[in-house]
Length: 83
Image (cartoon, rainbow, N blue to C red):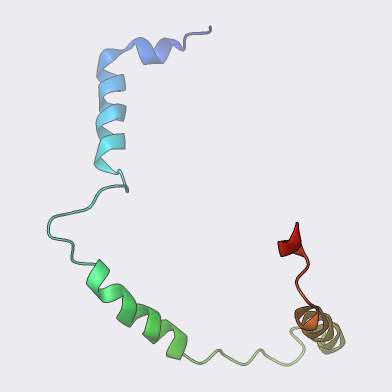
């Protein structure tokens, strides 16, 4: 096993460990101030209308073909669940 020399320096190693613990995202504060607002945020995000793309920014023929493929595939019965 190869040992990286800089990890032998206790001060640098402890600083990195402390930083990693400080930014841990897998913690929940007390009290939890976010969870109660998530439903309203989700509703707000879904209520925002999608912007219209500028003319010429995409291939309209390819978009129509993709739409047809999507619709056709969504109308076929699901056989993957039978496996």
